[in-house]
Amino acid sequence: MARQMATTHTGLPFTVTDGGHRYMIGKDACHDSLAWTDLDGDGIVDLVAIATESGNYEDTDHELVAIQVPTGNAMWRALPGEVSKRVSFANGVIVASTRSAARLVGLDPRTGQKLWDTELPDLLEEDNFDDDRARAIQPFGGVCAIQCKDDTYHLVDARSGQIVKSGEGKWKPLGGGVPGLAALEMDERMEIWDVPSGRKIADLKDTSQVRVVPGPGYFGLLRHGAVQANGAYGFEARIFHSQELREMGRSLIVPGPALGRKSGGDDDDDDSSAELRLGDGEFNVIGGCIMGNNRLVFGSRYHSEAYVVDLVAGKNCPAHPFTPPKPGFKFRTFAWVAPVFVSVWEKEKGTSKLIAMGHHPQTLAPVWMAEDLGGRSISNPLHIANGAVLVPRNPGANNNEYHAQTNPCSIRHIDPATGAVVTDYPVEDVNCIEMFGHFLCGAPTYFSGGLPIVYDTQGRKRVL
Image 1 (cartoon, rainbow, N blue to C red):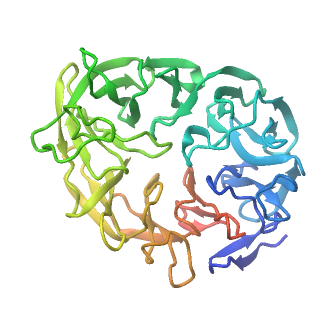
Image 2: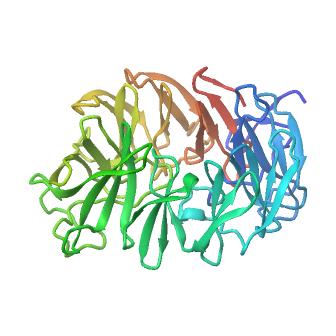
Image 3: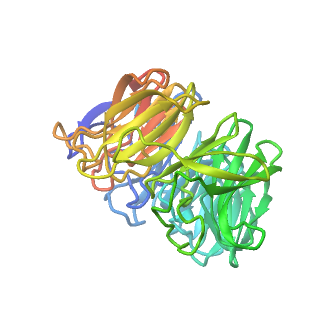
């Protein structure tokens, strides 16, 4: 078909494809009914979506449809009346839930032909990792991590459909920036796994708060738990070699004198280092980085503070405040985007506002500051690609959805070298964003009936 343009009820233009304009969008995980991959090998991301004639959330009329970008043509259709609510892409295979989440099937992404069909031990849990940004069928290299409703976890080989590992427990997210790592919580303890290799790299012996932060050739495992020699709670950084996954050293993180005792942790009123806040790991949200000089910067969007620590193995290392770019702003997230280290901050009171700042990677001195950004309570206020810092812009401030000219929300493309605005990418909802390489993929909201939008951040143009 020739590509046709239409608009959503909010005024955002979208492309009508061979899949029609009714796609099943989960209320709690807007990307879980869409799988992004290059289906035809032309270098442009395509999508596999769950189409529905009625537009409702039930399983009665769903089918999978593969849509080519940028033409909007349907490449294949599969599983009519059978596919359920979740689809993903892992190791060259489309993996979807079927039969009201009782089974998983694997499909050839180029033809839609069924490769395998596996019965699950129990119904698929649709909120895997207890986090909206993790898929219910979460790919980790050649396997998919899933959770069932009976609180069992499973790893499924994406090529064969075989369940290769199972157990009692729950998957937990560790944050972004270190692919393949996840936590398993079981029996009052937590294990850290490199999921693709099936290798356990740490046993924490308790259900600590834990997250990962990336570094140059190594990564940090940050923990709040029973880390001290006498079993007392505190904060710890374990450093691991990225390739060999071996532990290289540990440091205890203690409050520096500048932190004082102005705030306490959520569950550590009697903890001597209660003024430090680690925060929970969030899937695909980076809450810190380790610089080449062993300087750790970390924070959590659930708290207002961020910290700087110079790590020395085997030592108590004081944490100091990472100063916001302006008074009255709280920390949201970090990322490394060459040639700068980028932080994002949100105004705590009044009209919602975001600030993105580029820092020198060694000194953390400000290099540039980008304002005219916005959006409140955004799940992930920073997306990155090669040569692109991508931050929500929302003139309406208190609503993260597109509403015609009164609130034309978008993702703003900022040059990481200079902080200059390159362009804006209008999207229907700034919370419903995924990156596939350098393609920015915007999913529609549950109520819109619209279609996904795709932008090429290298070509700086819309391709769907």
